[in-house]
Length: 112
Length: 112
DNA sequence: ATCTAATGGTCTATTTATGGAGCGTTTGGT
DNA sequence: ACCAAACGCTCCATAAATAGACCATTAGAT
Image 1: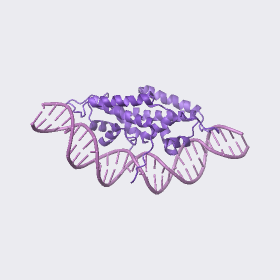
Image 2: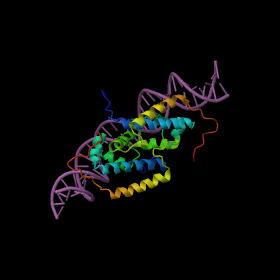
Image 3: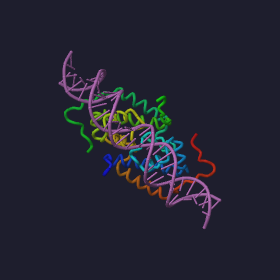
Image 4: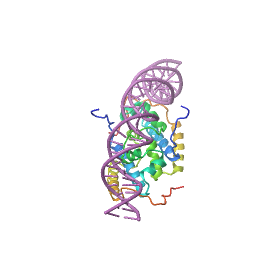
């Protein structure tokens, strides 16, 4: 294939994935955990750990978050309790919100 | 197949993915953006949007972050500049850290 | 300096996610 | 009440990720 149709990732999401990978790698090294150990504890392969730490956008988000959890990188700066309660609060909020969106003629303005 | 070998996700990563999906859905509805519109802007399919909002751990992290970015959900509360500089700082930090981890006899103790 | 092993990379087979179409249902606007 | 459309879901073909083995290189400990 001449050119793999790479998805046009926005700068933000690209950087976010990259930063997350860096944080995982840094936390792993600081904790003196080998890539192999991290892989085993996260239930993934060593090769996947490499891609995650490199910031590959194609990695499954579950695998990435699992690796992050193993080395102690917290998403959302929240502990387990805060996460769980946030989920509950959000679920409640979602029941109140409209289930379907019927956009008016004028489309929602995007922040460019 | 008798049993789909679902990966044993930890509670934390499972909840983190779920919460992220909820936040995206909530932000989308509040902004009055249809699932179809979000899909188009993120460069993904509508079905994938549904799985993302449902908290499917198998979704590509790039797609999830892209969708999050479109509706304004930020994993790291940081703007683009902060993200970029954080990446640079982390990269510099990583060059200082040991490249390979040689764990001592006693393995690194995990938090419980 | 030497030795052990961690790392980064490539390759292949297999599993899995993804896109796209189609379906019936539900929603919100009129 | 009506209607156009958004939604949630399933199925299938295809594309892509993942696991696993392998190798060469490099790093760290002794």
